Length: 442
Length: 149
Image 1 (cartoon, rainbow over the protein chains, first blue to last red):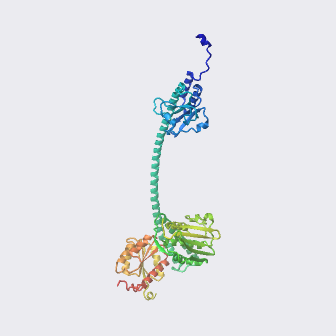
Image 2 (image 1 turned 180 degrees about the vertical axis):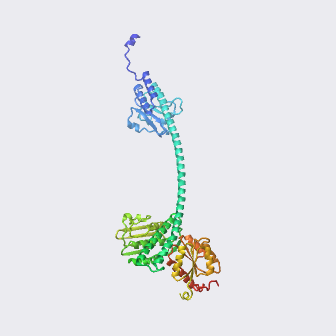
Image 3 (image 1 turned 90 degrees about the vertical axis):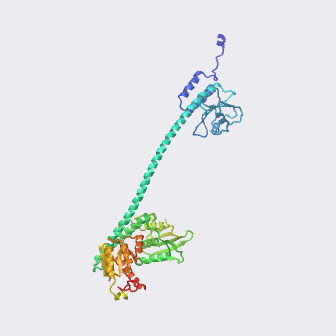
């Protein structure tokens, strides 16, 4: 015995019999590790080293993914792994079925089951820790015999409880995170709801303020008219010699008072107009009328200015234009303003008012074309803004309130129409009012 | 106008509470050849109208004691004064005011500020319209045809 023992050949390190030390080392590693991937990697390496496994794969079920998650492999080409995709809920798949079992499933060589091992026989071992009904994943190992090697079985137990521990922990964290998120979410919801109600209150307040402001401006402009009426009236009477003859110098002063008072009146009227439009208190009075009649009326009202201008002012439109059904007063105000502007900004040449009917969209286009100073391209949109004139300097030479076009555009919008300008500096401008033949209103 | 030339100048009752404006219109109307009476509120307007039987009334609408709408309604409801044309005068350029004035019975409507010559032109227009209407004979001739037949 002794001899035989002494002559017995020194056994080669038996890979099939890992020393206790190796098991202990792995168990310690797993116990200390909180990392699923590192644990799985260590496990497959251990299998290769101590259990003689040539190829191995650890796949786990991750709640966040619809597929099995490959966490570690040994002895497999990356191409084979890339092709190895199994749906978690693909219950017809032999490997998913294998995971549902409590015992390992052996797949013989050429079993036809798709695997990264090609045609090599393998075992599919569910990673199920003893006290849990569901498996967390699979350990796939190539097999040279139908039975499970005890070392593989031992490792499976270690790895199973490790995977279960880590995945459960992860789920718990996710769950806690979810609850925290829910809490934050409902907190944010509450905050949003509060902000919304604050905004709603502010909106109502603003609406009331805006209505009050409109009423205030309407009252103010009325109050302005009373003294202004007296200023204009008495100036007029003085200028007409009602109270006796005036000298040229006095006449000059009185004329200045008169023109400034008129300017103030124009401002008050314009502001009142805007206030009423903004407050939605300018009702539409729709009636049908002929554009040609309206243009005649506007031209005769501006007759004194037209005569003084020495411009060729003409109206060009067919008498066969259809009747237009809209607010006559507002259209008149717009056309009056456009013609007035054309006369004001045209030192020489002509002003033409044309009207055409665009039957395709049933729109009446009224265009006021002049050969005046023109408007540079970059200013063409600005002229429709409040208190905007091309020449914003305090000594601007053209007078006016700077509100005319902004009122025109607002009025046109009220009637469902538009105003546009085409212009070239030095060549002239064309302002076109387009109105639906039947006012749609705002 | 022949009838006007034959009779005394037409009498205008100016009803306006704002003294500066009232006297201004009065001065310009006189300058333009009218006779003028003045009232500073609605009640005074009723009294003066019944007493003086003016040819035309210029009526401010916002008045103390009794406003212009009410005064107009009463004048139009009264047999003696219903045919006197009333020109409403207001600082409110609101459509509702014009409509309210028309419903109260005003025959015309002018908006303040109204230059004296514009007002006078409107008064002359009203008087000549009345004079040419066959169913109100002799409107321009004072004192005749005032009551309805």
